Image 1 (cartoon, helix red, strand yellow):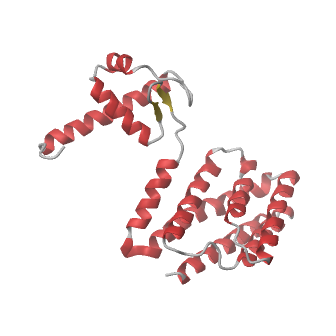
Image 2 (image 1 turned 180 degrees about the vertical axis):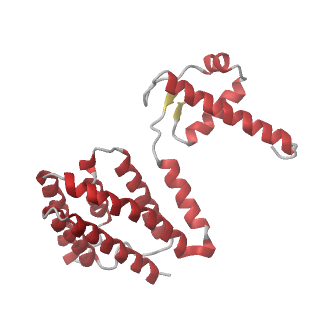
Image 3 (image 1 turned 90 degrees about the vertical axis):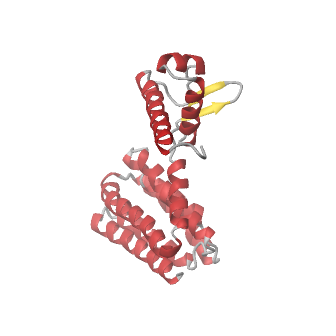
Length: 239
């Protein structure tokens, strides 16, 4: 609040953070799943020993993190705990670094690159023929779009989500999709083209599938590295 002493503001923020942690612990302790109804404000006041205003402020903060969902007139529910706050925060962080325009975007790309180049080794050892067929179908659609000079950002995203499905790790596609979304948002905000060479991009993805078909772990990793080198080169040219 304007005019409020610094120590008072700090104490209030600390109290709010503590109540947020207590609400999250309550969700964990009671094993509440996404979509489950939380206790009422009055019940939370009693359980946590705090005021109604403190409960409301904590719930508002948790809603911003998608940990809870406030449905006015119905109650407060456990949220999806999605990566949307991470996406929004990284997008803002990248766009706000005006003095490091391309460098900030490159950092996002490098994190995704490290994840994908490491994970592709596991994919090569576990991906099934059926999953390869689905990847092949996406690449064929990429190639058709590329021949007509049309960018295919959604196909690109679909390919990378399918690629890691065989790992059975729900967090992997969510995390990669988060970095993909940030990269696309920042590119769009800065007026950069989706893909200046769609045919080349389609070939990079074809090379990844070809190496996986051959169960060539090193080849798959090299193909993924070439893919990212190409994206980095394009980003550098757009400075």
